[in-house]
Length: 244
Image 1 (cartoon, rainbow, N blue to C red):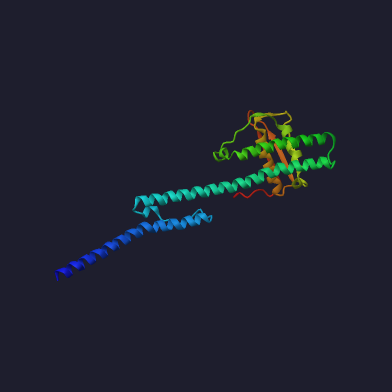
Image 2: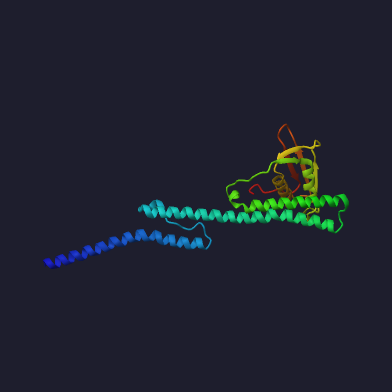
């Protein structure tokens, strides 16, 4: 009876030990299995996978692993959104000057504009080609864009003549065939210190938005109270939804 009691006790202790090991191993391996599934979801393009709640995991190392995995997934999702936004921005920003240059050169080639107007169109095309080169350099310098740093080249800008160039440039675009663009000049040959390339880029984007909003009349107003310069662009289009 003593031997039987000892063997039964050993058997019960062994079973209890295996049960404890099983429960502990489950608590350790279950989060790891969920992380493996989450890794597969990320590889398929889902950057918001289902992860175990790190606050409910008692093991500090596993909890830290889950937290680090979550941070990695969020970072990867952010990088993917940045990549998508960059591609969309590149296609949008480069399309405008390329289309403008092509339209103005085509107008000169077909004889639609001649003489001094043709020379002006070619000069604007040259300026746009330089601006395009600057934009390409900015886009290639991705590290500066990621850090939110834009290096401005400060120079004197003749506001009235710059606006006249921009108007001549957009009017050569097919999308502005039925759009009237009016400039209310300052009449003072206003000079502003700034980066002409980026100023043109901003104004061309705004004018492009107006044309995309089915505007037929666009007005550009320049105001120069004291040391502050204001350029207002208004149109009769449908506008942009407030949510956008």
